[in-house]
View (cartoon, rainbow, N blue to C red):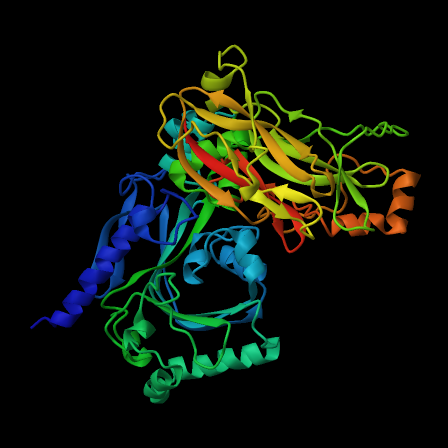
Length: 589
């Protein structure tokens, strides 16, 4: 009589193997976790040529044969192994994951982010992570693989490649076909512990590795399974078997007594309900799953055909910043050079004549801060950031700069091109007599700042008549003697036919993280006059820099979904410093 367990095992193995074979040659978006359900297209809809007419029957086990498998597909049996990756940096671990997938570089991809519960914004994740480690058992039952290395794309795929930088077409291509082609898939099971050490953790690398060893002993030593549950104070033992731990702190099991370290237990394949690792191993044959894949970049199969550089750039940007796929078109629309206005001349010897400006005073004997009242406008170019700067030979003149796109995104051209009538731009600022918003910078008897938010009051979310976005800025001073008040005005221009989808007030600097304002005009001019150097040595610049926050406030591709525009701003006072805060919006086009 046939053993039901053997029959069940063979059926599960056959189903998983067939699905893995059907996945070979299909498109895949490697920002996703490695799962068959994320393959592009219908089962068997391969992007590359395979000889489907030349087939053979594959003997898998004594009681399992897979019929009609192409000779272009190879099958190998695997051997279980334990893998340990001791403490390493965020980028080193990302590179390790990429190599296992056949992908070069250190940009973190979907599998890595899923296993360690990362956000996908690698700039933030890397900054918050001190080190990573992993230890686990990998049970590869079988690997199916494309035999050919010189893969050839179907002609209809080649014809779908946009030949120009067309964000809509590029986004559609990536959504339909993915970023890579699947070249192999391994089925079986894996039981892995992923350990994440946060920057605030005091553990040394040696202590962290010892900690990893203890976790491994507890996890994979059958005798210590129950003591592990008690020691780690995990209320729900099923955490140790979970295929997926969702990235919410309340559900991720952490180790008691080891602050600022997160331990994540993940299994794939086998029986979820089995607690013991040793017993789980016995169930992998009954419920195998895909545990790894390798890939080939789609663009590597396009040769020198027209449009390849545009698709390659779009995919590189998508992999690096990972906007949601439904936002990819708009994200790509905004991948235009960003420049700061006003431009400062880089001609050697150029020095602007010092203008006559109003000033602020913060104490009886302290230095004065002069305020440039120049109107800075950028025309029909979307503004993506603002910053305060100290300028002049003595670095004692405060001005405002605007970051904007160097040209108009294609998606905005029907609404905002030069031939479109949009009405006259309008300046908007705070009320001079509205003292509710006045805040002293240092002392009540000296200069103040108007902290009133400046936004276009007629614009609201869902307004079908159009939206107003910032296209200019100006600082000004109301002269009330020693209590003079600094204020901000913004120029608003209408964008007909668009609506505001979402708006946020951002009180934190740009997410570029490494970005830093080293000098008052760091991105405009690297020239420094001898007067500047004298001013620096005098210490006056340092005093004024302590009063003004010179941080750039902007949102770029790293700020998901990557197509924010400035729709408002306000001045503020924080810890005795003049600060700038910005309102950003996403538009419906």
